[in-house]
Image (cartoon, rainbow, N blue to C red; front, side):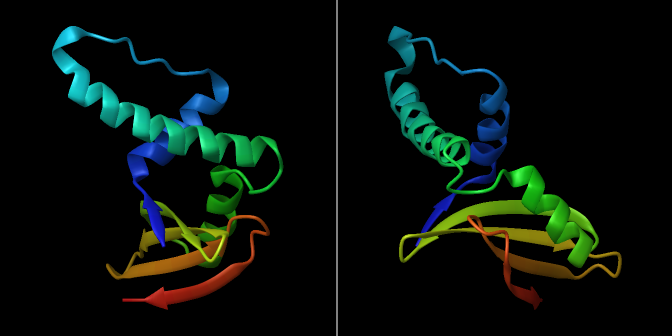
Amino acid sequence: MRRVPILALISFLLACAAPLSHPARADDSHAQSEHEEEDVSRDALRRMVQDGKILPLGVLKAKVLAQAPGELINVSVDRDEGRMLYEFRILTSGGKVTEVEVDAATGNIIEIEND
């Protein structure tokens, strides 16, 4: 199972509107290589959305919050046996965290777990 950090997802959404670039500087070659790894993940997600293989995060977010109202505090993307899954963590009005797992391709809610 592979997780993509929330910052990569946010960057992915921003990148859908315009391509991002990371200028090279002599003093940050290590930092640049880390960004390049993140770009590959964002690019792969962007291509999957553009190709219709997975649904956009915004579509799934609306569906999840309709089923489990609250404040979205974290989103991650997992690859499980070749299937892409979004995992949403939501802080409910009662102060509990609810985790909602969604099939990224179909939008079907797979599991709702209350912590």
